[in-house]
Image (cartoon, rainbow, N blue to C red; front, side, top):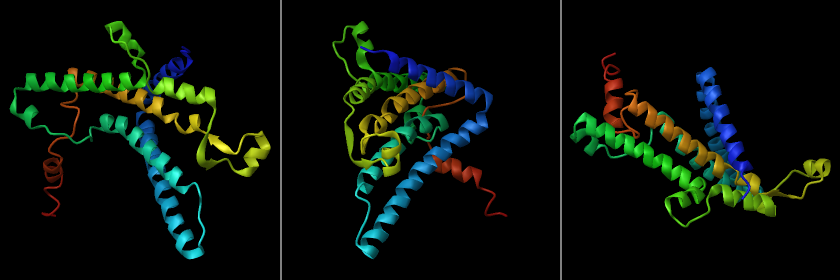
Length: 225
């Protein structure tokens, strides 16, 4: 088994960690802007298809596949962003009903479970150390697509790129699927960050609970003004 994807992902996470330490606000805006770009592209393509179909009886053949891929990118990137910002919705009735120490322990368990979930989906080979006979994961699947080099169904390179670089018409599937290992690595990384912050008392829980009440508190003086 080739371990170079693991090394690249580790290097990627270390770079993200270093940049966030050095430029926290810039990195936060960059992550938000990336999500905005993805969702805006979905809206733009969908709107363009409606105009093209009903106005000019034409359209982009790869629109459906593009939107499907872009939406999957949005979800996968949103997993780690939701943990980072604490916007994942959850039921916190148990956490609020138990003592703070117990609530902290449950929150730590949740962060650890999220980390293990990401690591298992990323590459389950390490479970063999625990006596579990299983293999596979996002890295192995992506590596297989990279070796095979098959193209996507409809997504194609522009003709000038085909002529300039001599590539095949269809965009390789491994390019489309590269988000799988990257997003799961980020999910595990954000879960580790959340675990550390909860342990240090800088964060209460992994999820966002009672968000409606929080919004009311934040805006309680708006009506008075």
